Image (cartoon, rainbow, N blue to C red; front, side):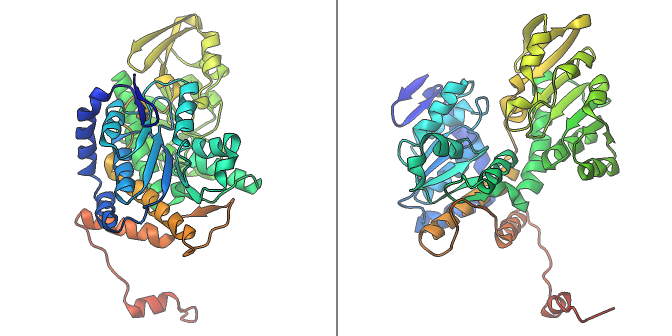
Length: 427
């Protein structure tokens, strides 16, 4: 592990060239973010601002980081999950000098929080999160920093849910923009990105055939729907477990079976948790699984699968393949845990495709600019509140994305617009 205190700590700085090639590949597939970089590298609206980021260190994240830096920001970064850092990309960022970077694949929990602490050493005035661990670290460990933080942005569903709860409880100390709740984020990144990358991770870790398998998807929100739809498209028999009646009903109308996990555990071949809630798979489920069952998690935290329950029941445990561990249970049944219960799409694969992260990270960038406008008095936000992405921003980003793909859409005429608003028009 290579270290230069106060600047970076990464696995191996010699990986930088390979990381740079990956970043260049992502840049070629992220036209919206690259257009924003070109536009704002001239005016540098983020000059004088320090951004601390805690988000998966992937090739796509590197494009975001270097776009923030091109717009004038000082940036300090850590990974938001112990198994989601691409070591080659981290090395490239360290060498490139656009950011202070503290991240490597396979860190333990203590190292994970050490890295977050280091991103706060330069006293940021903006934060950028995926899962809200950085924001929670500020509030719980460094509350003195909060007064000088203008605001933050949050990338993922779990983080937004927790931040809204924190705000409702009156405990949040600065405003946060819910990037996850943008239409151009959750209807694309969460659905198509999570769906494709999750199956990519499963296949890389196991090389199993999905067609004909009973694939159990826990949770039918945007992420779970994406996973279920992609699995169905590859010939799997998809079973959905849910706690929300409307979500379960949607699944049935889209051709999925729905049943409680206690029933699904007996028939599933592959289990994928996507809920953001702990203890989705627990001891009694492992007790009823058939020989050869595979399970993994694509929710933000690893607690969706109760690994202590699994270990308690296991007579033997060994690694079979990279990111694939075999547990021997009663009745000589073998079951397989992928990626240690961490995000399988990042720990066992590369995360979401660049094309969908293009829109999500464009929203992150535009939201950081919005917070700067707040600092300059051009927009008002109350401290301690969670804010949505403006509809206009969503439509602008989607429009740019369409144009880069060579598509055009219609525009309402003035008469059509007037008709749509005419409540006295009748039939």
